[in-house]
Every structure is written in C-alpha cells, then in structure tokens.
Amino acid sequence: MGFSPSVVRLVGSPNDDGEYIVLRGVGVDEETVRLHDYPRLYAVPGLYEHVVQELLACRSPQVAADGLAHALKRLGLDPADVPLLDLGAGTGLVGELMRRLGATTVIGLDALDAARDACLRDRPGVYRDYLVGDLSHPRPGLLERLRAYRPGGLVSAGALGGTHAPAEALVNALALLPAGAPVVFTIDERWTQTDGPGGFRTPITRLLASRQLQLVERSRFQHGRSTADAPIHYEMFIATKGPVDASQ
Image (cartoon, rainbow, N blue to C red):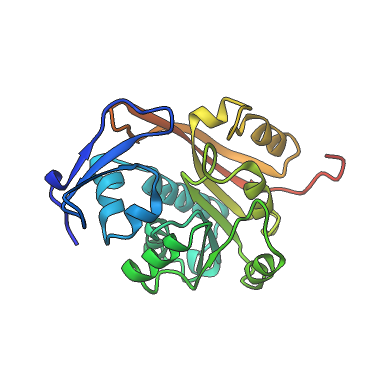
C-alpha cells in the first residue's frame, strides 16, 4: 500500500513524551499519534515505512546491513552458512536486507505482538521464525527456542537504548552466540553518551573492556531526521563476540 505525502503530517518540536505525527485518511479523518506508537503504525500496511523510512529518511537498516556484509567478508563467512538473530525485528525490513545479502536463516525477535503480525502480513517468508518476547527478562521458553537455531550472528538496527531494549537485552543476546560471531548494531548517540535512563555508555564500555565484544569498527552516521527536521545521529558498532572474562 502506498501513501502520498498528504496522508501524514509531521508535527514540529518534540513534546516531553516524544514526537508526534498527524494521520489523515488512515481509518479516521484526522488523528494525532506518537511517532513510537508502534501498534498504531504497524496496523496499516506500509504506513510505518512511509513515515520512518521515507518521510524521516531513516538509514539504520541499510547501514546495519552494510555493516554486517563488511563483518562477514572480514571473517570470511558465507551469509548462507550463518544463522542470524535480528533483535528488534519490527516489520522485517532488516530481515529482508539480510536475505538479500544471501542469509538463508534469519530469526526475528521483537517485544511486540503487533510487530510480528505486521511482518507476517507484509513480509511473509523473510524469517525462519519470528519470536515475541523481552530479551532483557527472557522467559525460559524463549531462550530455548532461540538456542535451538544456534544463531551465529547478531544484528540490531535502532532497537537498543532509550525507550527501546535495555543493555540487558544485548548482553543476553550475546550469550546466545559462539565466540567469534559477528555483531552489528546501531544506536542513538544520545544513549551511548549517558548512563541515565536508557543509557548504554557504561554497558558498552564494560563489554569492550571485558572483551565480550571485540570492536572492529565504531562510526557515527546520520540516522535520519526528527519530526522538526533536525538531524539525528547514531553510532554503528561492528564487532565480534569475544571470550567471556570470568572475573567481570
């Protein structure tokens, strides 16, 4: 389903509780919703991609895919031989990009049932399996199902930090991987520079210092734009899972 620019209007400066958009002709005459009201956006085929990818020029999925391609090439790995875990899979855009790289087994994981429903509706067949659960506080059955796929790499595009997945989700995802596995994630630079709510500064420092993550590349890029048309910058981390230091 396509959308004309008149269907969605971006609201200017963010409010205290986040950015807003105005929807027109999407089930109602006019409706103001939070930009991160994912169930509402996911409910309409193609709406989330129109808002985030087209209007706000989000680049994280493609940047993460390019980072993974670089990591796999550096490690001499064939994408077809590496089961990949997509943490914060959303509507499946990253999974689709992984498949285009040649990956044959991609496992999606998201905390929202609405994300899984939208992905199965809009991108059926992209994932070998799409699981719903909170990896920061995983239920035993979730971990068992993930381990059964023996993931050999991790990708997460914009799904960490802030109101998204906390650092515990990244730590628990790493625990599922073998040593040497490629790890690629993008994260808002606001969260890499703070230890406040949603912050990742100390967790990333500890993962690198303990060599649980061995850094290949850390770079800054423009993720997209805010609803007030201001640039938003993220960082991309390309790393490999290293040996766990038992003293940490």
